[in-house]
Amino acid sequence: MRLRAPLVLVLCLLLQPCEAHAGPPPRVMLPTVYRGGIDVSQYWVSEKLDGVRGHWDGHRLWARSGAAIDPPAWFTAHWPAQAMDGELWIARGRFEAISTLVRTPDGDGSTWKRVHLMVFDLPGDPAPFEQRVLHMRTLGSGCGCATLRIIPQFRLRTRAELDARLRAVVAAGGEGLVLQRRDARYAVGRSDTLLKYKPYDDAEARVVAMTPGRGKYAGQLGALVVRRADGLQFRIGSGFSDAERAHPPPIGSNITFRYNGLTANGTPRFARFLRIRYDMPPPDPK
Image (cartoon, rainbow, N blue to C red; front, side):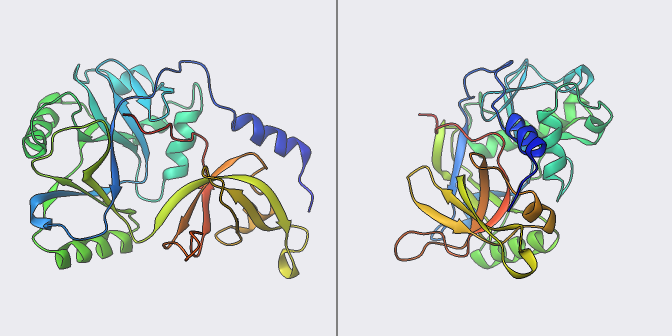
């Protein structure tokens, strides 16, 4: 299997972390995985949007990694001078477009006209989440900012209703759901009051080797050999488009993969490639 050298060089350059306008990662609240066993009626629920997380500190927009996000000045004009957590989002199925946009210095300003910051929390607000929902709605209606929207929050009564809503969101091209307990305060780090609910798990790993393809994929990628942060090494041989098999993620790059639980020895079950991960998440804040 051969890769074109210029392409590998370009990909490697793109995968280097951007040092310009970088700061410490924002201290944000992070979800844990929903596994059942809760009273669904005590939670607010929203759609989990497949975008790029954006943290507005009241003056500037930051990525989860601590890199500054620099949209055109008009994009954040008139935003309130208070901290907001949200998702920079275009539409379902447009993750690659928004990911490319936030990583492209001086990108085409016209593309930003299709982007919104979908606000899902207010980090500096000490009230329980149920009150923060009301505060977000008031903020959204009073701001008059076309690029700022409040993500819809709704209530469900039972696990059956929750599962039905998840199926409907996924069938429509969505990623999943987020649940936040109504009495929860904003707390930095992983929280068992904030839950993500998707039909699959996902994680990151680093590409350490490749195996060549056979048959119709002769001369192309067969599988990636990847290593998780804990040292576990395994292969991912599915989820690739024909273009990705012809020009696979280079060795040393990070990828996101999907899987369905773990085997008895802890290996991700049915692991399949999702996308290159250009900005690896920092360690969870404490």
